[in-house]
Image 1: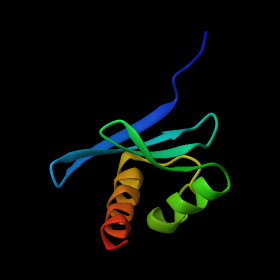
Image 2: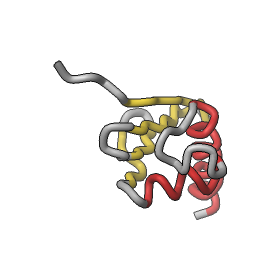
Image 3: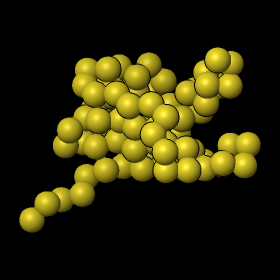
Length: 82
């Protein structure tokens, strides 16, 4: 039996739903806007992206919901600037 180990958080930004998803099994990290893929990272880049906003609490390999929300806020700021 497969275990769903994906952690997911969402936020409403400028009228759209932005979601950060992290798989503890694969280390894959995705940002989605209304379901469409915006950005995708794999280890070690996903771990570094999380650790850069969350600190070294879990070295990016076991992010909390707060860690993913911090990443989501940071990436949305970057996307607005670009």
